[in-house]
Length: 224
Image (cartoon, rainbow, N blue to C red; front, side, top):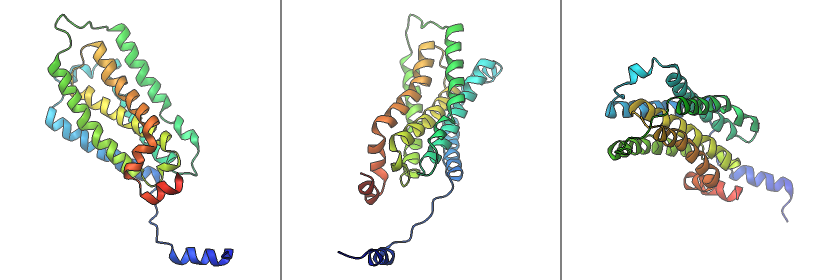
């Protein structure tokens, strides 16, 4: 059996240099800058919804929009902090106040301004455009989050993936709100709250598997 000092010397001699991760706030800011770029490109492609200027004069709309933006932003910050093993799990509480605001405003708007779906039903073309915007917004954000969190997120894969999903869901819902007129209450619920719920659930269930696609193989083997 090799002696402990010899083992330490052997490990030190064969250890490869490791580049330190940037601070979590810096990495979160980089991811959010990428998210802003994606939303900006979608805005150039789709254009703002026709009634955006008029809707911005309504407090409920502005609060709901602020709730989705802040939820996505704070969830991203929390994900990057929680991806480090020495950070407290209390960071999970960071996006909770804005998430409550977002859910409350959306629920209030649905209760007080119920818009019935007409006899023609939900317009298929608008639904397809909403889905396309959702994919174009969420897919690159998901991939960027997984890549940027791949080295450290295996400490808490499901928790970090859930927060990343909430970040993606909040910002994707923001894009839909800015570019599409979700006139039917059912569509508001599905496209806004449903997006975030699906993203969080997918992260919680498939978090470890998601990170295994992009994480270095030695790290996966070390963590099990």
